[in-house]
Length: 498
Image (cartoon, rainbow, N blue to C red; front, side, top):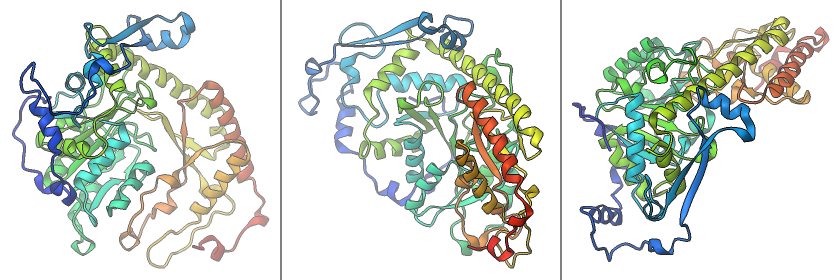
């Protein structure tokens, strides 16, 4: 299921040795031949016959999108909220019958679901010559992309603060991370260009993959502007980079009024800018339907799609049928359809924007007056990146470091503040857990990230009660921690111990 054609460049040299050695699953190839024409008689496959599936039909009751704001109505109306039913039967008319969905298929996913997600991707991104591959959610998709492209000793680029679970997944493959400095607007193109233009070949192969979260970046909440996206893509072309665009918060962008049509106001993706086939875009239903869905998709060139399918056919196999039935019926003619889905994510954006604004108003009343922390409003996502003015602590110290490495005791003080929050009954996510591991020999001699990890990631995805209680505890914990007497001063050699 691919989009209109474009002239793509040869990017086969980006494949990992593992991907080049992998061979298609021959039984899956036979399965494709069995679909060459209707009513083929098969004595080849080992599929249990559909008459023996103990499932006659599946029914899902979902929110109605026939409301002006379906999310608000669904959230506030309780048991009386309007709903609609999606039904998949074994033999009756539906978008994806049970007897079809429950059979074995290929790693690309069921054709009906592929088609539905291809149309959804066209609606929002309209990519040239790109193909959809279904996955078992976001993490499965990203890790498969790492396996597809990374060899031991390769260097991948990513934001200096990155979601650690996925960054760590690349380490057992022998992939080394090269952090790129970010600011309030996300990845800084000049920093990316500096790294690529001054790369020391003695360090190893020049980076050929950029992993980035362009909207509501996790953890910082930053969102790349259109100008930065264009400059980064131009750098990818100039330096022959593959871009893994991990975008789970795409539909939760708050820069535009909540009532505006998402397809017109959402920032253009790297996928929509791609003319070479060098973008692998990862999407997920986790933030817009439910995380337990464990269903997502990669949109890539047909070339990379074939290798993703080959990998999946010999590993996880195709995604689960229940999720594919749900999505196909949801987007089908008897479900929400694309306009209904669009209305739902528009309402979601409005609801999360309301929560974001509520959080920031609370922060302004309970935390900001202390003068010890500040929060910036994220333009997308679910997180607020809170900067702690650690330099105002009585035990904060600066020292002239010899060579590379940290020059302050920021890391130690932030660890202590984290523990102080826990003692007060509040769990926050410290910025240190998102710091990319890197090669100390090539760290910048100025501005070590250990001197810049004075941040906590806080979320506004929860209830108003949780926000009220949490920020009250946070404000109190800050004041208590920063009010320590000077008698607790510690020696500089203790500050900079390893």
